[in-house]
Amino acid sequence: MNVILLGPPGAGKGTQARKIVDEFDFDYISTGDMLRKEVESASRLGKIAKSYMNKGDLVPDSHIVEMIVDNLGELNARNLIDGFPRNISQAEALNEKLTENQQKIAVVLHMNVDDEELINRLSTRAVCISCQAPYKLKSPDEILNINCNNSPNKDCIIKVRDDDNPKSVARRITVYKNETFPVVKYYKDLNVNLVDIDARGTEDEIFQEISKFIVV
Ligand code: AP5
Image 1 (cartoon, helix red, strand yellow):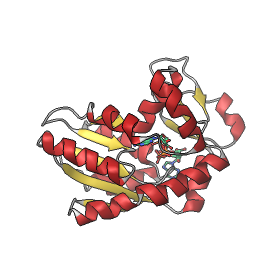
Image 2: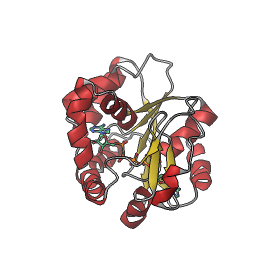
Image 3: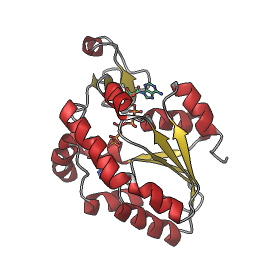
């Protein structure tokens, strides 16, 4: 069973993904988290991806598609996919792989938030570099005083993402509108079960809403 989280940067995809995984037992596949681990380990892919990510551009499909389809697993796998597909060509590649595996998309959760709120959220967001859990900062100084609740590694570091600066955030929002948003129409045209989620409430309210559409 495959559930896809689609939405602009800062919509709360990573936040909701962690709640869904805890409650419904999915394998969590996040292309953003995978790429940040590659960057952190300075792998070949990480070195290529870094410059695209820091500018707010998409990493080229040739590097992404293989990384994700190799992680999809077998027929009975329960995948929660966050950050993929990000353009029509990735959506087509995913469809091809799912058909080959005799799998389907159970639901696409399309999370909507206005630009002003996205910018506000991303200007106060930090992440744990160990488990990638997102945190909301009350002020930039707070980063020195918080610990990650999730990581077994107590020495883990919470930091502001390199792409959460105003220029990259603006670019990521533009890239979302131009390249990723058309995927919504693509899925609607294919009659895939796509649900629009108003993602402006509290994290718990949004989770209640999302939970209604996750078939267990
Ligand atoms: P990725 O890591 O996927 O980033 P993104 O899509 O830009 O999304 P974010 O992680 O910024 O936001 P989110 O929606 O997960 O929000 P979060 O829950 O953290 O991708 C990064 C980069 O990798 C891309 O730009 C690209 O370069 C590359 N990449 C990734 N996938 C790719 C692909 N398929 N192809 C090519 N390139 C790819 O929440 C944000 C903040 O808001 C947090 O502080 C959180 O605490 C807070 N928050 C969450 N919910 C709420 C709420 N309801 N109310 C108030 N605050 C909230």
